[in-house]
Length: 132
Image 1 (cartoon, helix red, strand yellow):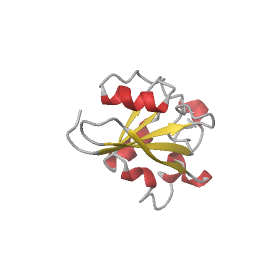
Image 2 (cartoon, one colour; image 1 turned 90 degrees about the vertical axis):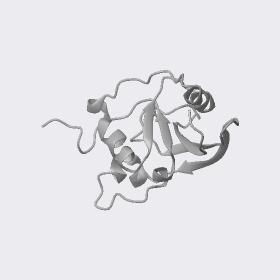
Image 3 (cartoon, rainbow, N blue to C red; image 1 turned 45 degrees about the vertical axis):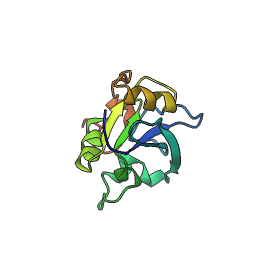
Image 4 (cartoon, rainbow, N blue to C red; image 1 turned 120 degrees about the vertical axis):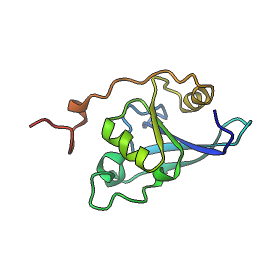
């Protein structure tokens, strides 16, 4: 897919599976991918409550989030706002039905990532999601 080194972050839940919602995820596993080599887990991020993407991107100063440093982010689902805001920072946010983070990265690298679930805006809650 690429001839460049990349960082790929996968949202994870408390059980270590791919988290169902990118904007509300507080845990991310980051994989380091060198051209021609298998992805290796590099580090994990544990975000404070106010630092999930859904909250961060609507705050007064939405800059310099740790996920803005990765090239690709993967989660079970994502809203258009989070996808757009990460894209503005050069991060591609993809969704998948794969539950294992390492398999999700491997599938992405093989250009065979299973599609994610549609984003349910009503269950998401929060600013920008509720219809008046």
